[in-house]
Length: 191
Image (tube, rainbow, N blue to C red; front, side, top):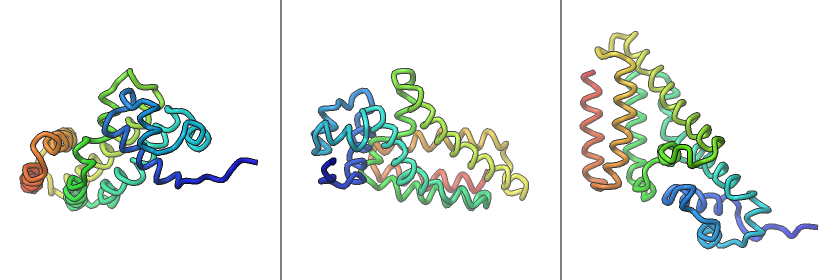
């Protein structure tokens, strides 16, 4: 009979997510993960599987606990109102320490072929969801005659801007990032 767990798996998964988020999959060694999670190899394998399985679970956790709540307003499909509410969520999120790490989705996609396909697919699916939700909301704004610009250009520019804002958070700090988010929200109103 297996011994009961002596730790909270969700807490350990949160720690693992942060290790991967800060360092990337390849740079997060098993020893580093075990040390940060304060568990032994047996416990890790028993609860989470190998490093690849742990990373997959960390991506799912990121999607559920970080990414999905940020993009939730986009699911309401209210055009520019939903996009602005998403940017408000993003602005609140950017205050968290982890925002300095960038976006786990973009970090994963940036690693390219150095990561297993299953992880790239997980990240691509999350990025695709953001793209699709933005497109639906910009299309709705266009149909309501609340958007003068071309839909695809607005979607691509918004995604590029979000990536730039995350980089700004990392390199120039919170105050500059928040100011740039406000500037982008004002520009969006005039599109």
